[in-house]
Length: 397
Image (cartoon, rainbow, N blue to C red; front, side, top):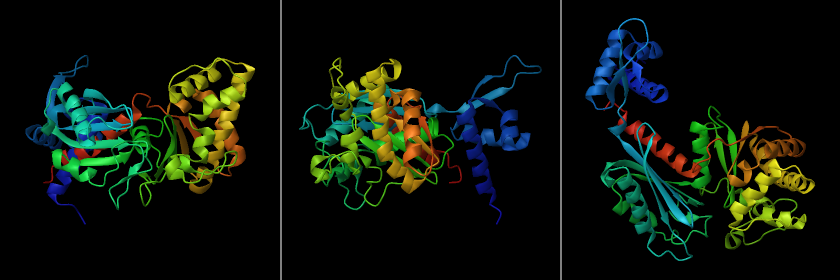
């Protein structure tokens, strides 16, 4: 059935807006060619979008034969979205305009096992800090996405799989946040958001079926199947740190331990222990995730017997858990992300790839993640922006 004129106009409007986001400023002629619209129709479209505050004229083409053409771009002030990256140590907050450019950011330290302030206050303080840095008001933000370890159970609303995050486990938390925040709020697992960032901007761009393995503060995975995140019945899909694996003692009462076999075998905290077992003495000090990344980076860049042995053993441990995921999911791609993986670069990737090809029947391609700067926060912003654009760019209403 043919669409109504209003529906067709809305489809053309959205196509033009997406092209402007992808390519930057475009002329009327260029938009017409990319969309297949005639010049008069493209002109009407741009006039309509300009009148609705979604597009603005910006500069002209130069350096080409003939008269200069007017250029158009998405108005960056048309809407704003925000993201939060929550860990036990701090909350990172950022605000982006509708083009995706970050316009304000803020970091709120949250040290200690008992939060000094209620979580609702922490969230609003972090958000307000980023909003203020952007020169905006809280009400200017159309949508907020909060990334945390673990996942909020859709049935109970309680945070699961993240007992190390103090203050976030009260059953009324989501209602309390909804009561004080004027915009829609979504909650997502932090590793899932890294997968969103890699799919939109990084190594998984254009891929519909992939696994992202994350190793930094904890070991986890994100599963993208048919282009969509697979979260599981309770939001716990991808909590592979709890996976029992050969080579590690069987961990029982995993919720109380907040750990499991794969975490104990290949998590960041296992790398310094492995280095000591191999006889390394020059092990740096500091938080275990930073120490692990430093050891892996050194092993990948300084070719010594001990460094090679560390990297090869670590690769075997990583491949041991990945083999289970690959055997069940048969993904097209595996993205290695998090500092304890990306620090090893292509050297570690190649070792894990070789080991995985011996341990699993299917052979997905392994790549190192491209999004390195605050990937959880970037994924939160991308998720919030996608929903915001769907709402703001809908000109059929």
